[in-house]
Image (cartoon, rainbow over all chains, first blue to last red; front, side, top):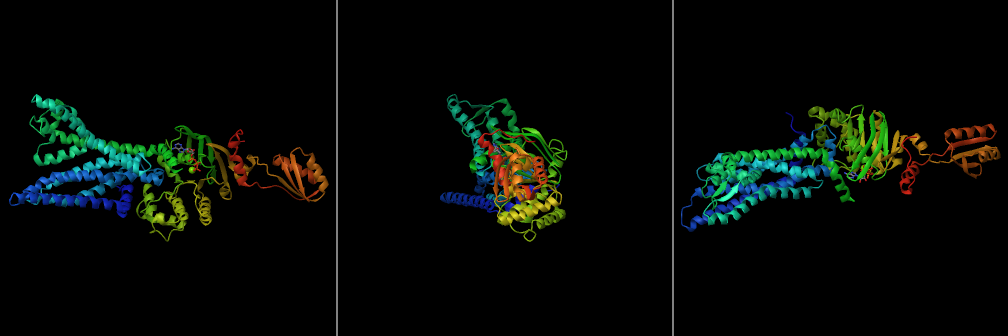
Amino acid sequence: MKINPILKKELRVGSRSIRPSIALAIYVLFLVFVMLFSVAQKIQDHLVWGDRFDFMALSDLFSTMSLLGLILLLVIMPPITAGSIAGERERSTLDIMLSAPVRSFTIAMGKLLSALVWVLMLVSSSIPILAVTFLYGGIQWQYLLVFLIMMMSVAFFNGALGIWCSSLFRRTVPAIVLTYVLEAVFYGLTLLIVWLTIQFGAGKALMEDGAVMLGSLPLVLLLNPGFTFVDAIQSAYSGQSLMQQVTSGEYFLDYRYETSALIESMSGHWLWYGILILFLLASLFVFLTAFNLRRGSEVKEKRLRTNDR
Amino acid sequence: MLKIERLNKRFANFTAVSDLDLEVQTGELFGFVGHNGAGKTTTLKIIAGLLKPTSGHVTIDGSDLEHGKTSYLRKIGYVPDFFGVYDNLKVLEYMEFFASMYGLTGKESRRRCLELLELAQLENRPDTYVDTLSRGMKQKLCIVRSLIHDPDLLLLDEPASGLDPGARYDLKALLKHLHEEGKTILISSHILPELSDMCTSIGIMRGGHLLLQGSMEEIELQARYDRPLKIRVLAGLEKVRALLREDPQCTEISWKGNEGTIRYRGNSQDAAGLLEKIISSGAMLESFYREKGSLEALFIDLTKEEDNGQPERGNHP
Ligand SMILES: Nc1ncnc2c1ncn2[C@@H]1O[C@H](COP(=O)(O)OP(=O)(O)OP(=O)(O)O)[C@@H](O)[C@H]1O
Ligand SMILES: [Mg+2]
C-alpha cells in the first residue's frame, strides 16, 4: 500500500515545527514532576510511621499516573489537531488539494494518522515514567500494554473529534474551543449526569437502606472514552471491570446500586462495548470530516470575507 | 474545451453567479474580467469542482464532474486567489507533495518537478523554504505546481494581484509560454488592460452576469464604445466637410487644421461606405481610422452601468 501522501507531508512539516515538540516536552515534564512528587510523598508517609519503605506502595501510583496521562492528552491534543483542516483552509491549500483527484477521506485519514503518530511518540515517552511504578517486582508489561493501547484508542477518538471540529471552521481558535467543549461533553457531562443521579438517589437509598436506582443510565458512560480507559486499566489490575462492581450489588464507592437488566447483562463485557462505541464515534467523526471537506467551503467562505473586510 | 451552460450559484441569500453561459475553445487564453464581487472566483471554483452549482452544467472536453470525476479533475490545474503555501516545506518538497496528490511518486515525480521548477526559474532553489520566496516567485511556483499533472486547462484566479511590474512581466512571459505550448488558460483579473495584450478572448462579468464575451476585437465592437473616427485630409477639405455634414451617422465633428475628429454612430460597414464616398468625391485622405478605444475606459464604462440604473445588455449580439 502506498503511504498516504498527506500523512507524509504532515510528518515532515510537523518534524520541523516547534509546537508538537513543546507539547511533548510539557507532557513529559508534567508527568515526571508529578511522579517525583508522589514518590517523595509516599516515601515520606512511610518514614513518618518508621517503616522500611516498601516499593510495593508505588504500584498504586500506576492507575493515578495513567489517568493523569489521559487528562494531559485531553488538554494537549486539541491545539494540535485544530489546525489540521482549518489551517489548510486558511492557506487555501485545501482548495488545491481538493482540486486534485484525491478522496476527501484520504485527506481526513492523513490528518488523523499524523496526529496519532505524534501521540504515539507522546505515549511511548511516558512509558518509562510509568515503569517507575513497577520498581518493585519487575515491570508488568501487560499493564503498560493496556495503557498504550487505551491511550491510542482514546487518541483516535480525540483526534477524529478534533479534526472534525477543525473541518467546521476556517480559523483554528474556534476549532480549539469547540474541541474542548465537546471533550467536556463526552468526558465530563456523561460522568456528571451519572454522578448527580447517584447524589440525588443516595438520600432515599440511605433512608431505606436500599440501593441507588440507576436503571439504564450507565449507558451514557459508553459515550465516555475516559470511563472506558479507566475501566480498561481497572480490569487489567483487578480482573473486574467497574461496571461489574456497580452491578454486583456490593458496596462500591459508598453505595449499592440497582441497574436495569440490560446493564447487568452488558456489565461482563462492558469494556468491549465501550471500545466499540469509541471506535464507532471516531469513525463517524472521520466520515463527517470527509463530508465537510467537500461541502464546508460553501458556508465558511463568508466568514472569511466578513472577517477580512 | 470548456463549456458552461446556464450556470447559477446562489449562496444563502445572495446570487453570486446567474445564468452564465461561457465557452472557451482549445488553445485560447481567456481573460475573465470583473471587479470585486463580480463572481469570478465563484465561477472558477465551480469549474474546479470546489463549489457545487445551484443549477447549470460545466463540461470539459465532454466530461463532467458527475460522470468521471477523476478524469475531469485531471484535465484542470487550479491556482486559487491566495498563495497556497506551507511554512515548513521546501520548494521541491512542495512540488512533490502536490505531485503525490496525483499519484506521482519517486523518480518520475522528481524529474517532473525539477522540469517545472526550471520553467519557473526556480531550479536553483529547490531547498528554499516556500514561505521565504518573494511574491512573484511564489506565484510562479503556484502556477507550475498546477501543471504537475500536465492538465489541458489552467484556471488562474487573479494571478497578477500584488505583484510588482517586474514580477508581472515574468508571469506574463510564463503564461505566454504555456499558451504557446497549447494549454488552454482561463485567467481572472479585475484589470482589463492587464489582460488585453495577452488574451485571445475576454469575458466581462458584473454582478454574476456575463456582460460580454468574445475575442478582443469583438468585445470592442460589442461594447459599441463610441470611439471617434479620425480623419486626416490632404486635399479637398471642403468636400470632405460637406460630405460629413450630410452623413446622418456623424453627430459631432471637430476640426483641428486638416485633422477631424468625428463622433460616429455607424458600424464598420457604414464607415467603409463613408470612406468610399469621400474617395470618390476626389478628396485625398492621408488617414481614416477609428481610434483604438482604451480598454480601461471601455471596462469602466461597461461595469459602471449598474450604478446608473441603465438596462442591461444581453450576453450576445
Ligand atoms: N461562501 C459564500 N457565501 C456567501 N456569499 C459568498 C460566498 N462566496 C462568495 N460570496 C459572494 O459572492 C459574490 C461573488 O464573489 P466572488 O468571490 O466570486 O467575486 P470575485 O469576482 O472573485 O471578486 P474579487 O475580485 O473580490 O475576487 C460576492 O459578493 C461574495 O460576497
Ligand atoms: Mg476573486
